[in-house]
Length: 385
Image (cartoon, rainbow, N blue to C red; front, side, top):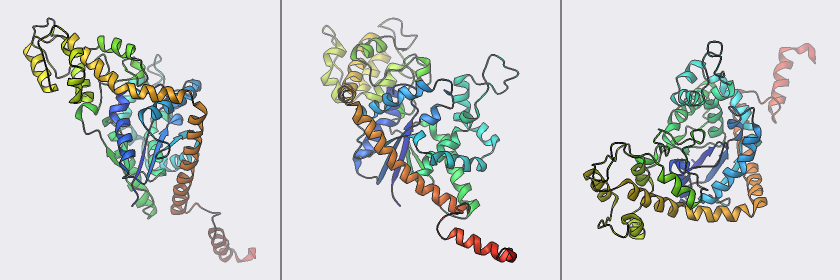
């Protein structure tokens, strides 16, 4: 069986470092591994419209931002198909057919759906909660739409963050239900590929909130300048009990250390020793474990650790900034890349849709099928001859 990747992001804003450690970094690694036959990276604009239907311009403008972030992060158009979801109409047809395989009750039990509804302030009962908008049907059903996206490309590997695990499980359920109902192993069950670094499963926001979110304004973006990164790191949430430098500190739940777990590499200690320890400090660390031990013991200030984190983040982001700048000067190439990737995506999705319709026996006008239907019904209605 071919090894195929399908993954993507909603174009509701620029991508941030949570996207990067959650899935984007892994996508680039997998792309460059040479172990996969096909890779499809989707800009999910249709899905973004389910809760931005009244502001389509926001979605449209952010398509180019996400595409630039993809290319800046290292996705290669020669190895990966970057495409726009709304331009692959076959996905909508698959979504429609899959809706009959899922109950409302099952969607309501999906933990990711529950979390996203709460995050956006949608109400379960529009009449009782006049100050909260009701839930758009399209948004409520987006696990089905996501199943259509994955199965259209026979995606059997989906590199995403931990929060998407319930969505992948729902896709697997739809695949099993379809194959059982129609007696054909047309669809392929996907496997989720989570980050191998536990700190990357769900990177918290700079304010310490459980999730980095554009809507909460607690993000560090891949395209942020070094100055912006320094400012955001300086204001990050740490340990509220670590009031004095001499106080023992906690690393668990400390956002600065969570970020260091996600981004820090052994070579950073030699590279940024002065930025970290300061010119007058007697500290000389060679590993993150040593830093954590000193912080927990006391005597290591938050500002010193933040300086080091800012240096680490900027070291990670600088190559992306340079690549992004290059592609910002070549916008026609970016759109041509999306056009080419979308054409490849449509061809793949069209083949799957054809197989789905054949399994459901609704491919009435396919070659050979129409002739059989005519013959069958001529026997049923001989007077029609």
